[in-house]
Image 1 (cartoon, rainbow, N blue to C red):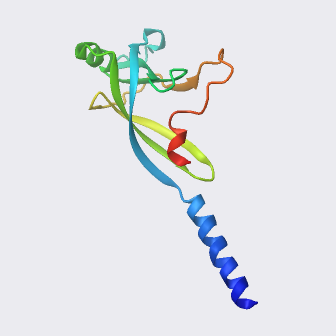
Image 2: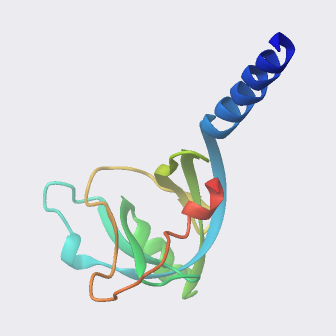
Image 3: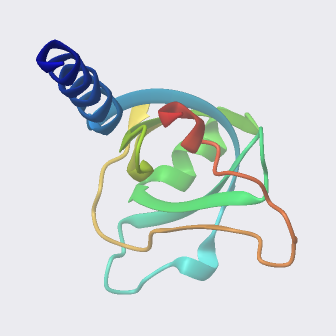
Length: 136
């Protein structure tokens, strides 16, 4: 009987700690982009806001600001870029945080300005956030 109890405790502990381990994952996602001058902030003149939409689910968008970001993307001539994210989560809570760290191979230079994340509220079922699959 004691051996069974010990095994149950060991297995339960392994499951609890294995499921609840926080992880940081870096991932790259293809995204469309457009300059977002409506989010320009006078107090942060170097920050150029850009709206990014996930290719796999364009109902989710990110608005990030970076030094010269809009100008850089316009010079590239591409409509789809690779965005590298740092994401935090675990199997129990799922995705609980993330940030864009590079766009089109260039590190995002944070100089203040606007930033937001969200989904199109006019769509009834937008599905899970594209980064949430990392922690299933």
